[in-house]
Image (cartoon, rainbow, N blue to C red; front, side, top):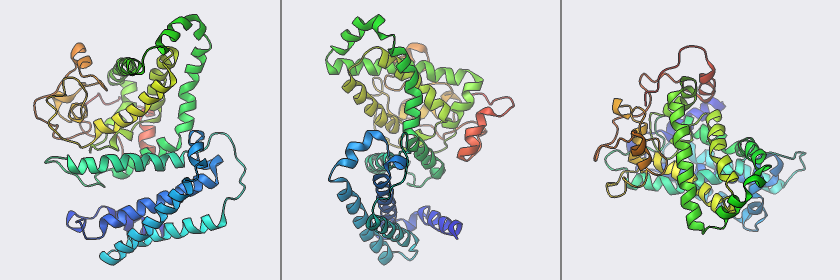
Length: 384
């Protein structure tokens, strides 16, 4: 029964273009499903924070507007679901959204139950906020600036990338703890270079922010290139390059090992050098948006800015299927770093014809891709 329901929802989400036109009820059904599911998950995170919330969002939960927001999402979801039922012949999205809203209302009426649990929980609330914030920002941008290469919202392999998005959000506290552990160990000996840390922290915010961009980009360039050069490490990075469609969610497709290694490599020096906390958190939020932006299907005339700042076209060539796209464009912020090391490639007004790895050797499915780097056999060479 559940498998049939899931298949019916999937089929309507991936409906043909003529069935997704404005006024068909498809958009209202999708929005109703997203908001209904978000309201339910946010309510669970609020009622059972030990299991479904992250400590950093405690202030959000304590706000008097939190439950008002949950109720508003449920109310809007119900209205959009009714619109879907009125306009659309296939009503599976509308009925599913109403079921989520009714479940949210039922749990809200029951109230919070005492469930033991403490310590690190799953970031259900972070997943919802992350999805809504990035989705509301980048989905309209991709629709407005996709140029002559538009692609559907639920494009090829969207379910795999959404699962990566979900897992990385749920495990955010665990991954932060593991990646920060080496930094905390280094900071135990920070007194040895405390004068340098004090000098770094005393700089103006803008200066610190630019330095953070530069240091992080240099560190990530070396890290990124290493994962393309060492066959064993390439197996992990190949998971990221296996995406055959590029949009704002494609950047989420990363093996957990690579995420932990990347955060450790970048966080340790930034913490150790003593950058002021506001500057460091500001940069973390900035790179959070940049990572989605450079993968997004956003096409514009970037000739005036491409020599100075990484754009989506620059990074798309890093994922390109063409032979010329192999091992190029490793920088995250500054293209001149690739020029400096001879890995720059950006043909005028051209985009890759496709994305992925030659022969597409990486299996499909999160579990299969998680196990892929550990399998025996000769690894496929980097092909993008």
